[in-house]
Length: 416
Image (tube, rainbow, N blue to C red; front, side, top):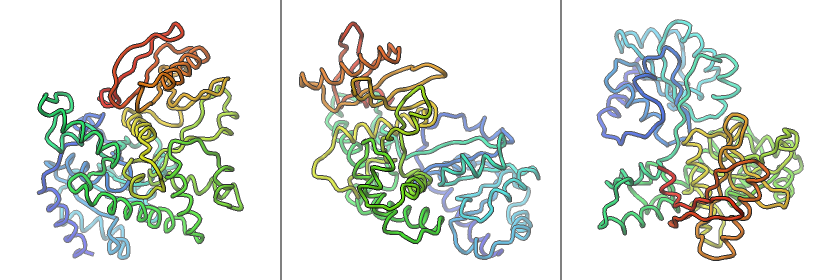
């Protein structure tokens, strides 16, 4: 075991020696580290959670355990490990636990560490860490920090462009980069080698299915879960119910379909946006819109016969709403008016609707303008909302429609 932990210390030091782009996050790192509560960094695999934890702790005295390593889990002895950590990292102030959800009964052990006064920084790739697993034993004892693939601003920064201050001679480069990001997403490891993005993301998608879902939940019928993942990916931004999915894939059980949908959300691969309704029962029964954590997965794995630029932009907007702190349980929904006109995003704050958002790649055709604006006005009357917005690829103006003001702006401007 000592050899394993020494090897992991070398791994930690090698990672610390590398240079990284500082991620744009919503919390103050110094304030986060001062708290005695557990610092929980969660999100999909390979988005930089471990890197963020290392950057937070770079100038601190901290111990390190990486539970993605099979050899550590195979030889696990909690008492021995804690004794060896004291020897290898004398008087350490923080303990970093990387991908701790891979350790059986991790939550019980983490609870014990917390009670013993350890200052913990934890990373994990499972959404249940924020719900059933963490909530059951560690309610009120942790601070979550959710991470996602690179934002558009971070993508520009990697390419040495300031999205807030694009110079005239940089305009063409900025347009190319924004289109590239829309189509291929922002996974950090694809940014430096765009030609390999498809292969990398295809492999990552398969790895998440097999490692984080099939293996974790001991699923026997692997073909069904894989087919469902590909079906959801090909139908991103579309509203679907569990019955719809079961019928399309000829699955025998709707209950199993619902269970598999939950499994596909756990590793932050898919998200399900509910339809807004003041009656919770009706909201629960309505189809949910399907979103994927990164547009690059669509290009890498989805069956498609067109570019789907409108849906790609909508998916990009959804992920950015997650970055802004909205969630699919309390503050973000879609909506259908009494006349069956769809609103892409309803943003709720406390007990009132704050904003209605439509996403349209282009707003030049009269038919498109009428469709998007009339839907917004109709929904505004039903939901008593005055803040109406259309996000486009590159158009910007303000229009009056049905006695209401509608702002039309480029999505890239709104992202900031």
